[in-house]
Length: 445
Image 1 (spheres, rainbow, N blue to C red):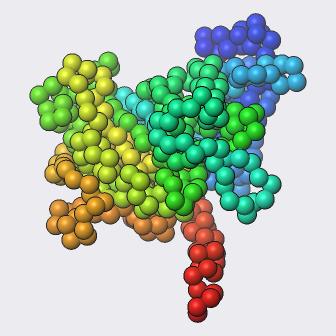
Image 2: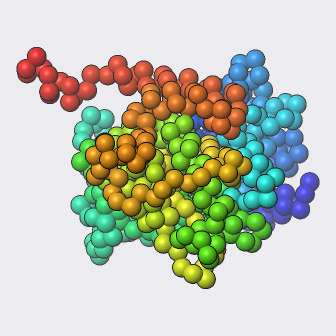
Image 3: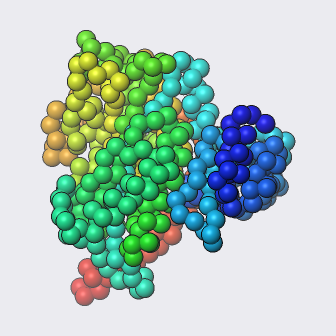
């Protein structure tokens, strides 16, 4: 037993923690949980907790059902509030086979493999997401219109705003869980909010995002509303993205920064961006994994639909935020397609490997998009060599299936399962007769 595990056990004893929740995710990004008594944690550290992996989406085949969940002591956190009079703590887990081999389709293992590749190249990978979500009034009617909790807009402030009170409680709760928050504000849509998490390493951030989603939903329930991370819940209002800022570091040095470079970006950063653009269409099924995701991408409202980059250009897929001379730690790029419903482990893994591929192959960054790309005509974009992202999940899966980079990143098991799962989602969606079709065609056809 290492010192970190000993510290966790001592803290549980000293704080009289009564319940331990072990968390991990399936391939699609659904949070899974198993509760154990504190007395069982020492054995869980030593041997893991057994479970039926074949019952978890995409984790194992029936013939390889026996899996082990190994709590990661570095993720220990006492949760806010109490359950039946006792404190509750949680730890994220790494999943292994009974032989002790990391489960190839464990999303945390997928990201660890990508981070190991970066480490072998001398890099650490850091991310900072801007997470958007909607707050709605609850309804017992599943067919009722969503009713946002307010009609406020971007950065609106109101002393009577329910969303403002919600953000105050949510941010305080996140901070109490050692999930640092950088900003929070009302977004453009009615009932839409954004909370930005502070920069950290990608694995810790993926864990934080999973904890964030659960926390936001629990705070919403406690306040009599419900929170949704659906990419496009309202037809006539903006979708919810998760714009993600990224940097590579060598130790304490941000390798994306070059005081003599264009926009203060290094040659390494430009190659990383070129890799993102090269593989953008292939990774879209991962960063935008639901049929509804494409309603956001192709509805405007600053959601990127075209493969290009720009300096402070919010119509671009990859944006270079304005940087200050003398602030090397803040050098970063922003990937704007990813939405709030993505599995963060898989999304960060494919983004990282796409960028690293650009570095390894010395890919050249194309010319910058200066104008609003969405406002251009198709011929204008074609003349500039600007391609489109996939128009729907079916197109995204077709491109992904041909991608060696995505297949290698996910591994055979997770890659195959993800495609099967999403093909089923597309087929279910394709067989629907929508209200739009009934309203448009029943009276006239």
